Length: 105
Ligand SMILES: [Zn+2]
Image 1 (cartoon, rainbow, N blue to C red):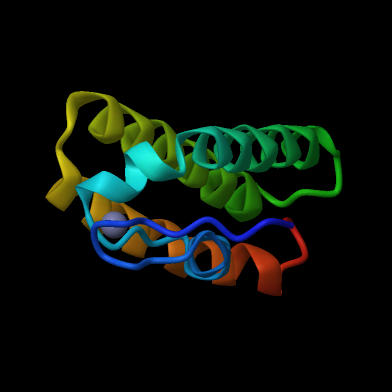
Image 2 (spheres, rainbow, N blue to C red):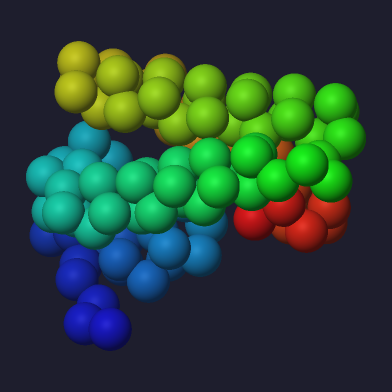
Protein backbone atom coordinates (compact mmCIF):
# COMPACT_ATOMS: atom_id res chain seq x y z
CA UNK A 1 0.00 0.00 0.00
CA UNK A 2 1.48 3.36 -0.92
CA UNK A 3 1.51 5.71 2.03
CA UNK A 4 0.29 9.18 1.16
CA UNK A 5 1.01 12.11 3.43
CA UNK A 6 -1.08 15.21 4.01
CA UNK A 7 1.30 18.05 3.14
CA UNK A 8 -0.49 20.40 5.50
CA UNK A 9 -0.24 18.47 8.78
CA UNK A 10 1.90 15.42 8.00
CA UNK A 11 -0.81 12.84 8.76
CA UNK A 12 -0.10 9.61 6.93
CA UNK A 13 -2.65 7.57 5.05
CA UNK A 14 -1.52 4.51 7.01
CA UNK A 15 -2.29 6.28 10.27
CA UNK A 16 -5.72 7.24 8.94
CA UNK A 17 -6.33 3.56 8.22
CA UNK A 18 -5.22 2.67 11.73
CA UNK A 19 -7.13 5.31 13.67
CA UNK A 20 -9.85 6.49 11.30
CA UNK A 21 -8.80 10.01 12.26
CA UNK A 22 -7.74 12.84 9.99
CA UNK A 23 -5.27 15.47 11.17
CA UNK A 24 -6.72 18.53 9.48
CA UNK A 25 -9.28 19.57 6.87
CA UNK A 26 -6.69 19.25 4.11
CA UNK A 27 -6.27 15.54 4.87
CA UNK A 28 -9.65 14.95 3.34
CA UNK A 29 -8.43 16.45 0.06
CA UNK A 30 -5.20 14.46 0.22
CA UNK A 31 -6.90 11.11 0.90
CA UNK A 32 -10.29 11.57 -0.74
CA UNK A 33 -10.15 8.39 -2.81
CA UNK A 34 -8.98 6.24 0.07
CA UNK A 35 -11.49 7.71 2.51
CA UNK A 36 -14.38 7.03 0.17
CA UNK A 37 -13.02 3.49 -0.38
CA UNK A 38 -12.72 2.83 3.33
CA UNK A 39 -16.19 4.15 4.04
CA UNK A 40 -17.83 2.08 1.34
CA UNK A 41 -15.87 -1.07 2.29
CA UNK A 42 -16.92 -0.75 5.90
CA UNK A 43 -20.48 0.02 4.94
CA UNK A 44 -20.68 -2.99 2.62
CA UNK A 45 -19.24 -5.24 5.29
CA UNK A 46 -21.57 -3.91 7.98
CA UNK A 47 -24.51 -4.23 5.65
CA UNK A 48 -23.59 -7.80 4.81
CA UNK A 49 -23.11 -8.77 8.44
CA UNK A 50 -26.33 -7.00 9.39
CA UNK A 51 -28.23 -9.42 7.20
CA UNK A 52 -26.96 -12.57 8.88
CA UNK A 53 -29.62 -14.08 11.14
CA UNK A 54 -27.30 -14.81 14.08
CA UNK A 55 -27.02 -11.08 14.87
CA UNK A 56 -28.71 -10.20 18.14
CA UNK A 57 -30.99 -7.18 18.33
CA UNK A 58 -28.28 -5.29 20.17
CA UNK A 59 -25.74 -6.16 17.47
CA UNK A 60 -28.14 -4.84 14.86
CA UNK A 61 -28.61 -1.64 16.81
CA UNK A 62 -24.85 -1.14 17.02
CA UNK A 63 -24.43 -1.77 13.30
CA UNK A 64 -27.27 0.62 12.50
CA UNK A 65 -25.66 3.25 14.69
CA UNK A 66 -22.32 2.57 13.02
CA UNK A 67 -23.81 3.09 9.58
CA UNK A 68 -25.55 6.23 10.76
CA UNK A 69 -22.25 7.66 12.05
CA UNK A 70 -20.45 6.77 8.81
CA UNK A 71 -23.12 8.55 6.81
CA UNK A 72 -22.97 11.54 9.17
CA UNK A 73 -19.19 11.64 8.78
CA UNK A 74 -19.53 11.67 5.01
CA UNK A 75 -22.06 14.48 5.23
CA UNK A 76 -19.69 16.50 7.45
CA UNK A 77 -16.86 15.88 5.00
CA UNK A 78 -18.95 17.02 2.06
CA UNK A 79 -20.17 20.09 3.93
CA UNK A 80 -16.68 20.86 5.22
CA UNK A 81 -17.66 20.60 8.91
CA UNK A 82 -14.33 19.17 9.99
CA UNK A 83 -14.62 19.67 13.74
CA UNK A 84 -17.91 17.74 13.71
CA UNK A 85 -16.23 15.17 11.51
CA UNK A 86 -13.40 14.70 14.01
CA UNK A 87 -15.92 14.22 16.79
CA UNK A 88 -17.87 11.66 14.78
CA UNK A 89 -14.61 9.90 13.89
CA UNK A 90 -13.94 9.40 17.58
CA UNK A 91 -17.41 7.89 18.06
CA UNK A 92 -16.91 5.69 15.02
CA UNK A 93 -13.58 4.51 16.35
CA UNK A 94 -15.06 3.59 19.72
CA UNK A 95 -17.94 1.80 18.06
CA UNK A 96 -15.53 0.01 15.73
CA UNK A 97 -13.70 -1.43 18.72
CA UNK A 98 -16.97 -2.70 20.15
CA UNK A 99 -18.04 -4.18 16.81
CA UNK A 100 -14.66 -5.87 16.42
CA UNK A 101 -14.96 -7.35 19.88
CA UNK A 102 -18.29 -8.82 18.87
CA UNK A 103 -16.80 -10.09 15.59
CA UNK A 104 -19.22 -7.99 13.57
CA UNK A 105 -16.62 -6.26 11.44
ZN1 LIG B 1 -3.81 17.06 7.22
